[in-house]
Length: 241
Image: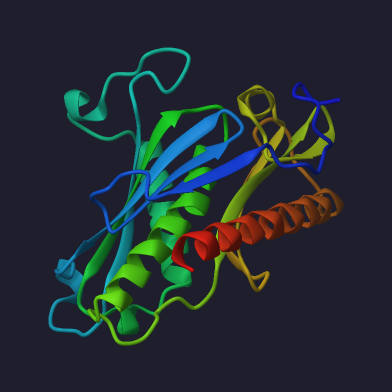
């Protein structure tokens, strides 16, 4: 039995609240168990330098943890003067996954920034950022379509992410902090609605894992992402009509 009573292949309780902040073109408060991430998608009518003189747009992400989002206060990275390597790695991961499901040519010469700010961390912050951030991104794109700032919908597929790990020799879906902290293996899956993989991050934290174990992790991840995408679709349908 897991600490919170879940089955091995069961997600934590998920809640997605759209339009949580009034200013961004898309905003979502994503709650996964006790992990809470604020995801805001902001449209900037400007391309990044490497795309200037092209017709393509860009989707990118920033990730940040509030000082007391974890059990012990952390110094703000802006005060420290530089971002941690972990922060860079996570925000690059989130941005990459979004770009796999967006047609950048149809988006046009603009940038959408998806800011993922962790208000409370209890494991799975990066996967919550991807899952909630995708919903915020869709809301922002639908805003652009309504305002006729883009002509065609650039969304190619849905996207969600979940963690799977091996804890005390058992494969488990959607690890909380207590489980993640003692996991022998930790894998993050970002998967599209079509069942294709946008990203897989697999780490043998304390031991190796074999193909049979990876297959079981994959089955759990596909199940979890399918449930997350179903919830995303319901939230978007209720919000956007």
